[in-house]
Length: 114
Image (cartoon, rainbow, N blue to C red; front, side, top):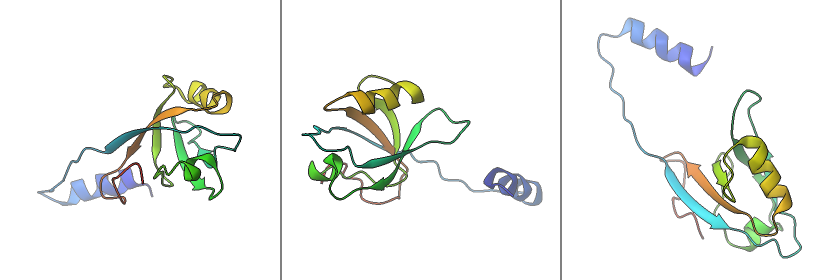
């Protein structure tokens, strides 16, 4: 069962439900490649509209520039582009992609830049 199905079942059984809503941590970083690979596995959900960070390579440009990117971080903009296809193209074509990242609250350090 999915998280949504579990939540619906809980709502049907409980007379009261307490929920906490929190804003994600958002940061922007620019990563000059300097001849290196970006060093981030880019993931997406087939029906989704965005990109997520997967594995971070220790010898890639992201790590070399001290960007505190974490697996699961969601890219919400890359060099002014906001659709999945255009963000992917911007990552591939730019020598220094600038990206905005959204990280769920409580998912780790919220520093953005190491």
